[in-house]
Figure 1 (cartoon, rainbow, N blue to C red):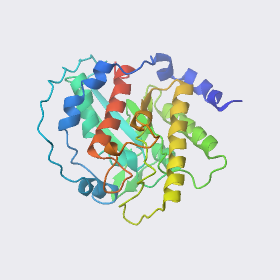
Figure 2: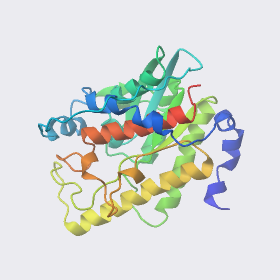
Figure 3: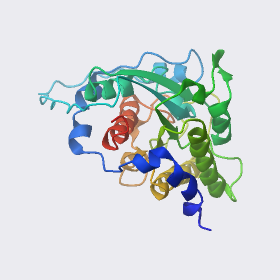
Length: 300
C-alpha cells in the first residue's frame, strides 16, 4: 500500500477533513500583512538556549530612507465564534517564534477583528518528531517551565511543523518513519479533539554555505554543512508531500524561501547562528501559517 493512502481512512472519517476547503492563499491576504511584518518586534523568548541566540544575533542596520507605499487595508473576515486557541507543535523552529507567537496573533487579529486568540507555543529545541508526539498527550518541562499536554489546552487549530531541523539519527527508512510519524501526530490529536483543525507547516529552508556558522558549540566543515542541509530539505519536502497527499492545509515557507541556487535565502536566516530565523524569517513563516488558516477558513 502506498504511504499516501496509509492515513486515508482516519482523515476521511475526521470532522475537520470533511469540512476543509483547500485553496491557495489569496494574494490580497498575504500582501496585506506587509505593515505588520515590517513593524512587529517579538519580545517574548525563552530565557536561555535558542531564544538567547535570537535576541542577540541580529545586528542593527540603518536603512536608507525611501518612500514607502501605503499598505493595502487587510480584508476582514467573520469567525464562527469569539475566541480561539491555536497551538504550534515543533522543534526550535517553533520555539523561536516566541512564547506568545505575537506576530501570528497580530496577523489573525487584523483579519478577524474583535476575536480573542490564545496562542500556545509547543516548540522544544533539539527534539525530533517522536518527542513531539509524546508532548501531545503528556505534560513536560522545558527550560524550567512546566507545560501541560497539548490536547489538554483544547486548541481549535494545531500547526504541526516538520521537525526537519532535528532529523532521526539514521538515514535508511527515515523518510518513511517521518511520514508515519506525521500521520501519528495527526491521528493522535484528532482522536482527542475530533473538531480540531490541523495545519502542516514546513519552515524556512537552510543554507548550505553558512549552516551553523556562529552557533555556540557547533562547527561544520563544508561537506558536513552540505550533508546536514540536504537531510533537512528532505524532511521539509516530506512534510509538504504528506500534507498534499492527505488533503491537510499546508503552511509552506520552505519552497518560497529557496533562492535560485536551491539554498535558503539569507534574508530569512539569523546571522548569528545561521540556523534559526532572522526577524524577516520569523515574519515570513508566521505569514504562511496565518495565510493557511485564513485561506482554508479554519476559523469560519
